Image (tube, rainbow, N blue to C red):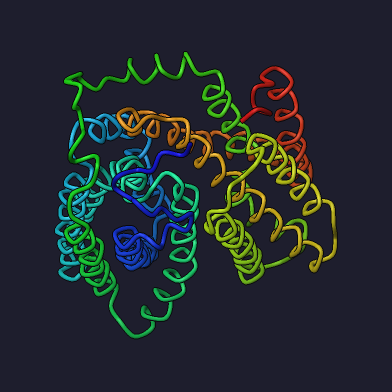
Length: 407
């Protein structure tokens, strides 16, 4: 007998049937479009005011390093306090700092003040993903969780496509500071959605057992769940060998296809379309049978697509390959998150998700490895390593951890 969740007496597999989730996703889309506009403005401001690749690297380091360092602390907070209220405080702080960031650009204040504000805002931004991902299951029924995670990923990719394009158009008629102000106002959309969705299950039951949320408890749970261990181990493979393709794309476009910046952008856009379709397919909420097998097939498909891309001389075939790269990589990424969420109890959700989200830290390491191979042996061999690595290491991991097939 299927037991209904009392919070959702008539559960649907399609998450947008939930009014609260629908409101949250609407606010998130507007806010995320503003975030991508902000990122374009941020990099453009640094180049315009300093004309220094070193300072550009410094700013992006200040933006990305907190995401790796603060993921687990954010997960602990997500399991200890009301996730909705945490997001309200975080988004409010980010909005105020973004307004001030625009002011520093508009008034041409010290570059180092700019760095300080970017760093402070990045600290708050780093705490958002674990808490936000832990909140989503509290807004929908369990039967809608697959759809909710897929829709959240779809929103991310829509914003990734819309934001930079909109920023490019606005920069032609606006000052850079205005884009920061627009992003700050856009944050109001997600703040209003969080205020309007009201109390969530997490706000009622967080820490109800009286236990202090610790990383040790999360690690102990993972240790008892071989299937969860396998998910986390398997996630490292595409992060090291597959996802650095975005970093390597300028070299692939130039060395393999003799393309300039326009061609480089076109290939990434085609990849984004594939990723959007992959996430959208999973967002309908259809029950997935044999998720473990699909995880393995999608990583292997990712590797095969990369090999097809670097192994062709035809731009048309390369475009098809990049579409498949986006499709298979995002199908894997979204399905992995869905499978993990299904295996995690709510009182540990924040901490375990924060550990899982640390897999992003392997992408820069993979980029260094692939970049070194490209330097020593050429771009083609670097691309071959990416495809073969995805396929070969995945097969090896599955041979050692066969419980993946039973997920």
